Length: 320
Image 1 (cartoon, rainbow, N blue to C red):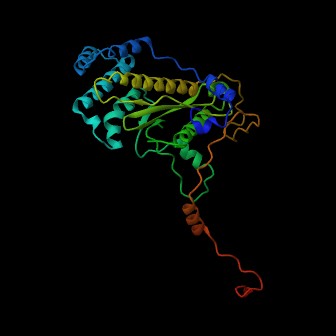
Image 2 (image 1 turned 90 degrees about the horizontal axis):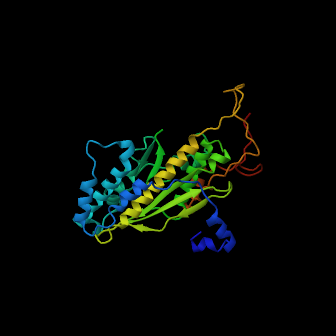
C-alpha cells in the first residue's frame, strides 16, 4: 500500500494492519553467505575487487551443492566488473542487451542449482495465466496465451500496472490448488517477481496471509552500479536475489509437503472428488477488458443473419 492511488481506499488502521500482518516465514541468508558478501564491501578500486575474486574463486574442490551460491556471487560480480571496465553500462542499450549482459548473471544464474526450476525469458508465457484465461474456453476456439513476463520461474514439466500482479496471483492460485487448498500449507506459499528496466530493479512479493485477500509487497528500487565508486550497491541486489531464491525453496516445500490423512480408496478413479462448500479457495483474477476495436471485430465475425419475421417480405413459407 505504498501507492498513493491505493492508500486513499484504506484508513491508517487498515494500512497498518496490512503492513504488520506476518507473511510466510523465510529463512535469512546464512551467516556464511553474509560474510562472503562482506569481503567485497571495503574495496575502493576495481583492482581490489579483482584480487578478492581471485582469492575466493573455486578450483577442482568446488562442490555444487554447498558452494553454488558463492560461485554465483563471484560470477555475477566478475561479469559486472568487466562491463564497468568496458564502459558499456554508460551507453544507451536495448533491453535485450541488458537481459543478456546484466540480468542473466544477476538473476538467472542464481537458480542454477535448483534442478526442478528453470528461468524462462522472452517468448515463453505464464502457464498459470494461460490456464486462468482458458478456464471457460469453448471447444473450437483458439487457446489464449498467458502473460509474457520478463522472466518466469517454472517447474520443468519492463512490467507495469496490473500485469505482473495478475501473473503472480495466477501462479499463487495454481500453487494453492496443487496444495489442495490446505490452509496450513497455503499460508506458507507466496510468489515472487522482479521488475527491471535498464539498470533498475525492484522485487515484488505476493501472498495470501489471511485466506481471502492477496497482498502485494514491493522492495525499494535498486540500481546496478555503472562505476567503481558505487560498486558495493550490487551486493544488496545479489542478497535480494538470494532472498527470492529462499522464498522459492520454501514455497516448493509447502506445495510438496503432504499431510498424513486417513482416506478411503473406494471409488478411486470413478468420479471427481465432490467440492466441499466450506472449502477455502481464493478466486482467480478477473479477465482483462477487451478493447473496443477487438470487441467490434469479434462481433462482426460471430454475427448471424437475423431471422425474418412472419408477415415480412423476406418471410417465405416452406415448400413442403
